[in-house]
Image (cartoon, rainbow, N blue to C red; front, side, top):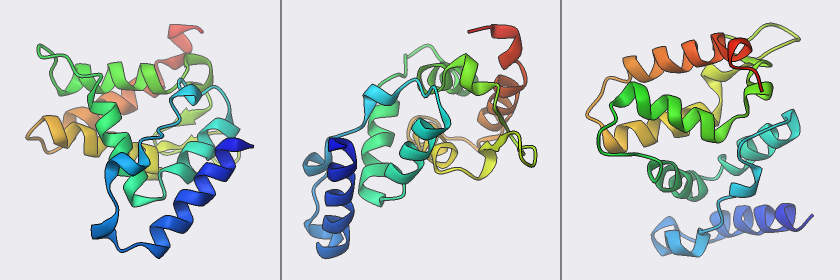
Amino acid sequence: MLQKVILNQKRILSCVQDEDEQRLDDFDFVPSDKFPLKTEDDFEFIEEYLSIKVQRREAVKYFTNYYAEDWDEWKFTGKLLSKLISNDFAKSISWEGTEGSKIAFKTTRLNHTIRLAVLKIFNSDLSQSEKKVQRWFCTSKQRGK
């Protein structure tokens, strides 16, 4: 309940304040307790959270903290996905989605935010990251829980 109140408060502030007046440190609440995402409700909560531009920027900063110097784009994307989405829940997601049974990750705000985090670290056309995301979801059944 408290998370919804905070989310609504931030949404109101983002509409009321001029973007130049908003400071990222005013929005330091990244709902890290939701990670890794385990349910569709968690996923929907994060999608709504990421709908606010300032919060999306904060999430990008949060995601880039998982980067290690010796990683390439492929490895960073995979490690980030494993921190953000549980293997069990990943089985209900695919790149394109399946009508009625799987979430289409390609068009989600979470995917967009991951891409922004990749671009913050790497000078990239995002092809390796996209391939890794697709592969990661395809192999979710093999990873177990």
